[in-house]
Length: 108
Image (cartoon, rainbow, N blue to C red; front, side, top):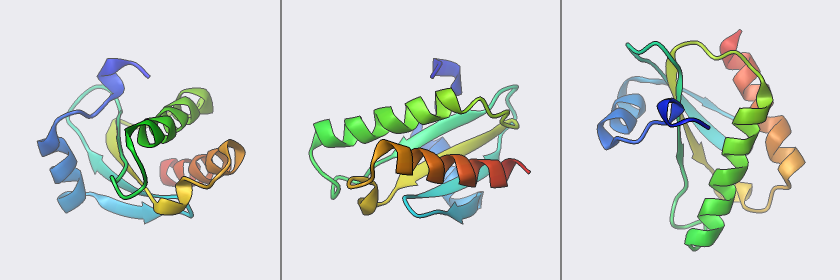
């Protein structure tokens, strides 16, 4: 995932949580908010309750890989993905199917 496609600042996360639309799936919640930029951006949140840093980073890498390989066309919005606790036990293919399905529904 390229740097221009990543939400990094806390104020952008907070705006998406307060003003954005919320969708949920089996393994994650997704907050969607319009941005005034010329590209889409993704932010990924994983709670410390899920595990230690290496476990949280592994899940984030999986989600980034799923987004990169999805080949979906995203409108110019901010997408904040908050992973649920059961995402830890999910296999890659299950997580992939779930996230791709919800992202397709959002884009339609």
